[in-house]
Image 1 (spheres, rainbow, N blue to C red):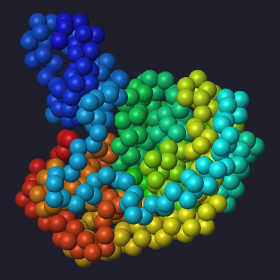
Image 2 (image 1 turned 120 degrees about the vertical axis):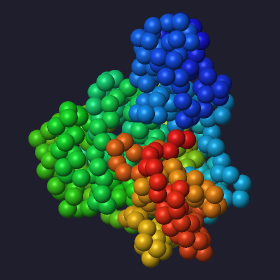
Image 3 (image 1 turned 90 degrees about the vertical axis):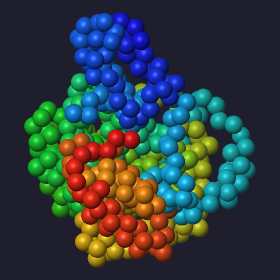
Length: 443
């Protein structure tokens, strides 16, 4: 393993790469490892600190130091562990395969239209896509000015570029609590310090945002609607109150509108004149996870920074994919399919929430494709659900300081499954395994 801090850290990373160390695995206590290697405890502590700053490990209080759920180190087994055979997998957060539009007709039309190759000089945001995006943003009240729209390879790519263009390791960033698990891991990988902003059904709380600003954050990431994992949606009243808190500040607000056309709730943006802002709208949930495109609107300076960082890296998003989006947006059948999916998710969510309420289970999900279930014992409830034949996502993946819970995704949930799933949830959260010894689950 080595005797210097760098060698110890490198050994841990090698273990993650080779899958000898899996997500959630515990590292030896600092003092124990120091004694084993015959080095000072400060040496091991420095190695662990470096690993934490790079987002490879996390400190879990009495549970010690563990490999993060998604460490920024490539592994041979980096793919998500599948649900046990015979279980209904409600843990993925993915849209239902049968609710996604068919891409074949659009691809066939594109094959004819895009016969001529595009060179370096013509690459970048596709003009027709940008113009269509501008119209859609305007219809939702997003205050786009000039050419302040760009295209990135999905939401996380956009958020990473936005954070990296403004923040440095050690800086504080406000994020929702609970929050999108990928965002928590990205913040850790960038060496940023997350400041939790509590979320209720109407979005980030006003007092939570005030506390975050008081803690020195200069950037805040929020979800506009269909929040993952709670299903929160920022209401018009909440948006107005949050804008008043932000007035007169230079805080960059990054809004994640990942659900876009799938959201039943209207968009209430926090963007305002005279402040830096960015709104990221992904295509993955309505049209398919493999369509790695997000449209980003913002103030001109912020968008220029994102484009500048792209030029230093990937350069641009494939114009073939961008032109495919144009084809999809012009196709009335695709529009109808997305509208049908939105209505179906609404039916599934309403049915599950009603069934849980009848059984006395505390759950919420105002919009989107997830429902959040509260429980006093997260690990016991998740294990009980698995034993009953249902895989759900443990809340520890999403929580910073908020109470325990777990997430149920609706993509694979048919209406005919609702009562059986609700029965299982009721059993899991009130069973002895689901009520004793509260504490986070480690996966």
